[in-house]
Length: 574
Image (cartoon, rainbow, N blue to C red; front, side, top):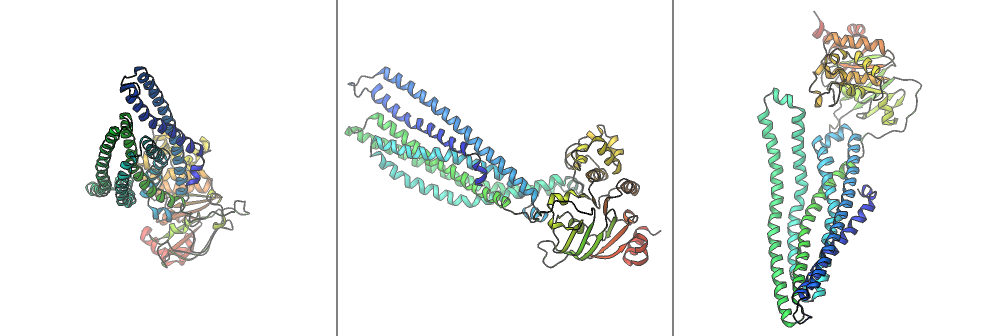
């Protein structure tokens, strides 16, 4: 992810530079305080007579340096945040763009909850890591190394205390970080599970309530939340042991510095001010090492999140973009040539087997068959939601694999049984088909989709806002909005995948009548469970066990297809 950070190299450099200024001011303070004690108060070089002007002058210098250090700290924070936040913004956009390019198969493999966690929480952890590396790590390193240099410059004997304390601190940090590091990946997995449960329940709230399963779902959410809490507590508990141990080492080190300093003061090799400065320096040094605890937590968690985000960024789309983006001599022609298909992970089990079918430009083809026979799978191969395992699917004489995806999908409009409605106005939901459409075009699409009647009954008409997931609309209303969106796109191929299942027969007949009159040149593929929905199509393809069992007009199938007659008799006879 270095390429996303490279853009903000200037902020990345300026933040540590200003941090250097802030730490330098912190390291000067103990020396000046020692000067005030030795000369301003004790007057060691003036026969024991204090020097009040020196105290005032040095005190003012200290205040000035503190203010300068404060300014440097603020600027360091500003540049660190500019770097980390902009970096996080770019990574989040790139991750979302990659998620949008993933195939259905890849999205299912990650799971919706996990992808949400990776694009939100995980990238936030990486942002925090970048900010911590720019500021926290630099500050810790400078305080640690600068404190040792300043302390040894007072007297080498103080270095003995540092040499004794450091191994204890290092062992303590390494032990606790080593124990906690594997838990961070587990923590993110638990968060994935929690988000999955939450997402399923929010989107499926009507089903939960209809089956009175609130108690069960509360228990399921509680289990996922408890698992997350348990992992978090184990991590926090581990580090809660670390802090008091480090404080004990720090306090013992301060006592040791005072003891060593007292001996050296007695020998006349150091002054009381030097001892006071040494106590401050040892505190700065050991506090810097203690901050390593926080940094390593951030690094461990950020590294775990980084691996998860990298999995998304490095996941090459299974549906590769082709190069063809030109015009064809024919428009609206769809051909299946010996097409077979198996879903990933199903092994040799085929959903479609050796399908050969040609849909002519401007033709209306109905597709009929039992649930699970492969109807939706067949039409999903046209816009390349999946790629055929064997054989070829051609649109306008060109293999769909050769198309640039945007060029292929621009030729196709799709309306599904489960209508995806966005939480915005009805107008904007329909205008998804063509964002630049005029008011008149949107109105005509709504009319053709038989949606105008219920839209005009709404208080704000087309400007009526829709609840999230379309919950403020009925199933039939959602389907008509989605069909209006597909009609507005005015593509050469229209696929209605059981998109009228919630419509009554009268409304459905009016819809197909409008399509026939106003979009006669559009190739229309209609998947349906009801013969009444497709019997007026130019041809009807009957699918059984993943193969085309029969294909022809309603009259031809009634005469030649026993399967079709059985379906007809079961639905319409009498």
